Image 1 (cartoon, rainbow, N blue to C red):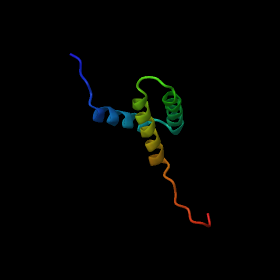
Image 2: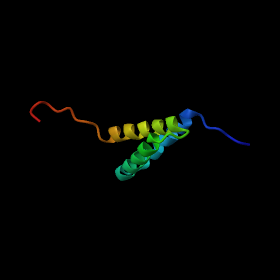
Image 3: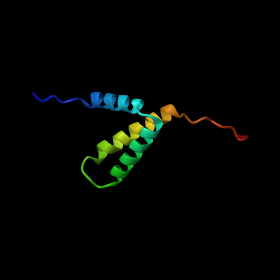
Image 4: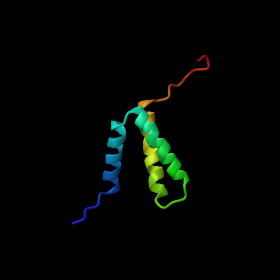
Length: 71
């Protein structure tokens, strides 16, 4: 019997994998996805979604600090 996972479950698993990565691994993963997303091949929207998830994980780990005009 073949089972299929919903997009929600796949997204949850991807987020768990991203959280388990070190910063260096997350950077390598994002760069690889960015290169693949630039190529015209089938499945690009899926890769772009994965890239956006990787970017969101980076932003979660490294939030931007609002800086005033003196900084």
